[in-house]
Image 1 (spheres, rainbow, N blue to C red):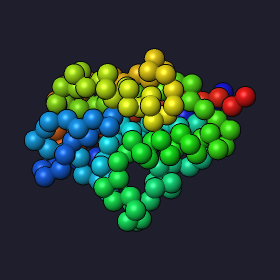
Image 2 (image 1 turned 90 degrees about the horizontal axis):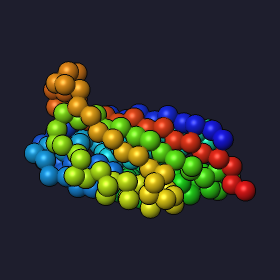
Image 3 (image 1 turned 30 degrees about the horizontal axis):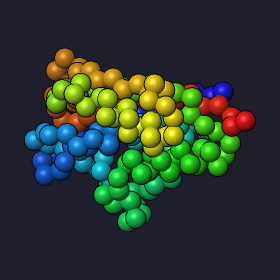
Image 4 (image 1 turned 30 degrees about the vertical axis):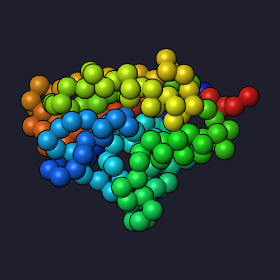
Length: 158
């Protein structure tokens, strides 16, 4: 068994849709990035790749490659799960936290968990998604961006 940690952050800007955990969320601002900028799925992808010592999301899907411009991060996460399987690993569980002052994410958490479980080919109960504010402090508290942390436990395929 191995464990990996992932972290990602993107700036909030006007004119972009907000996508977290593969769910489009109504908000006046969205996240800026080369792909759909889904910080939650990017952090989970990095946790998975890190656990397997397979690099990181930037190496696997470089922002210099036009193929990934506007990419759906659920598709990228599924490709990460496939890469793990190709290297003899599978996900045991994922625990993640989104740091955002707003919008409130509770109404979307179940769908995020379903999306992540499906992309990673694990059961719903193997995926945890939590959300917290930072009480108005820092860049997330000031609504300049959204961040996410994730940990992932993997084990060798039998």
